[in-house]
Image (cartoon, rainbow, N blue to C red; front, side, top):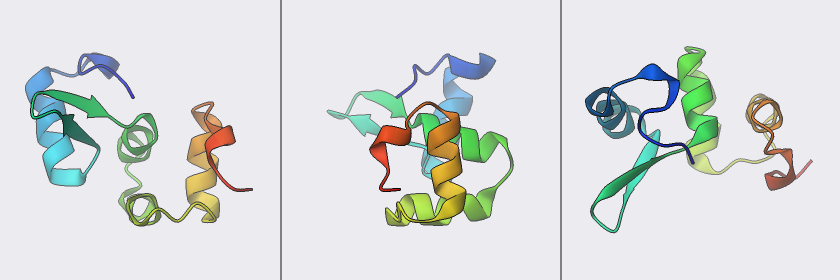
Length: 78
């Protein structure tokens, strides 16, 4: 997970993206946590790539490539 200030975006922008595109979640009703993978998919303007991510489909090649690119390949079933 990334801090809200990541990628030089304002906290309000990140919150809006989290709510609108499912890029993160609120933890304990307070702090927003942003998914590194979901944010990468979104910033690549690959909105179709968010579908398998949100569905938890770890076998999708598109999703696997984002996990690998973000250094999280150990979290997917290859």
